Image (cartoon, rainbow, N blue to C red):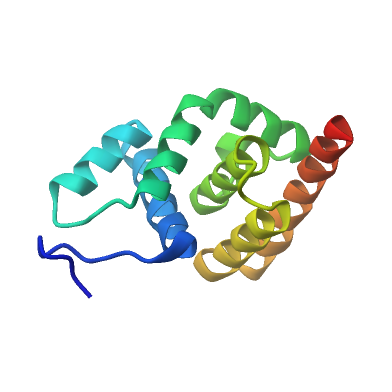
Length: 144
């Protein structure tokens, strides 16, 4: 399905998350900022949905804090040594868990685990689930 502009149309948050994840991945492997990678995508023939734009911008704005948090919970596994897909799945999900109250914790974790399994490995799904579970429990305890 295409919009009148001829660009592919993206539906739903799941699709927007995948667009955001692809942009974060591209930024990571090319050395661009996430917003810079998003601008490159948009200069082509692809629409970046508003939700994906919010995710990419949010991750960029909090990248150091997100990486520090992920690093604290990934015992003996530095963020910079993680698989690129896993690292960016975690960044995106952590942003949603901590800074997007409109996203249920379960949805953020489930989407991240599914993306890790689909785009990386089965072990990545368990790895992502374990880290995000710890972070979600800590966030809930702080709020509770």
